Image (tube, rainbow, N blue to C red):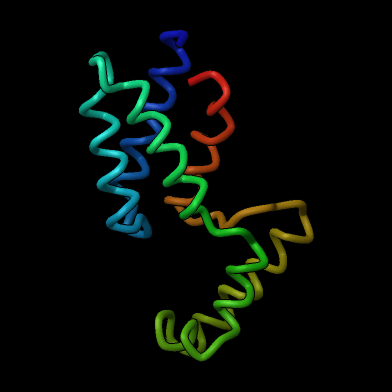
Length: 117
């Protein structure tokens, strides 16, 4: 793996970990991957990390559905849920495939490099 790709993924992984919207499972996978960089476990942990990111990144249609649901209203609050749904529809119209919260944005950036990892 090229050093510049590794440096980029490490930086985005730290952004992901620091994101308030990062799930605990993804945060754990990110920390485990960071700990494995430069070790014999790196290749295997990279595979696990990519799988976790692919599982946890939120597709835009899923975000819209969640924001418009009762569960979304409970998580975000009724007014904020409407705002989240409207924002998601807006970025979908602009071509977004995924949620653009800090965690999903970092995950998407990492996943763009997965074939180079």
